[in-house]
Image (cartoon, rainbow, N blue to C red):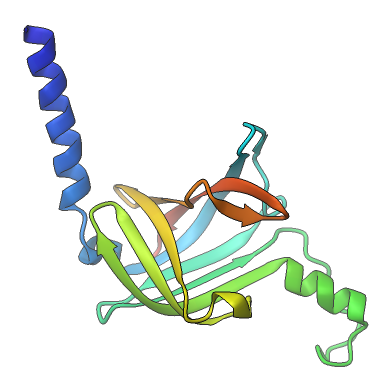
Length: 164
């Protein structure tokens, strides 16, 4: 009986913690600290965006958000003009950079990004669901397990640190 009461108390505390999160908790600018992924068959990758990726995630009070992730180790284009750069270089630059922006809503420990502009045009006018956990100035954001990247279904987890 005592064990059951303790288990229920811990469950309620966990649910309360998740429900206590609000849009206000996310407001600010976050810098990417680490990234990892797990495929549907359990294979892990500690560098899904290469070694040393750079990224920023911002949430504003008026319900707007911006996300930018740049793979680590990106090669510069051979020319300054992104339009006249060789096709293979442009393809590589596109494949190693992700950016999107729009509005966001928070429900419990879930944030939904309502995409209005993106480096991946297919995302525009769609939603990107993310699960989040806050621990002090650390924000962990995880994609659903149905997320497809690099031709594989996987879960990507990003750890961010508040900078502003």
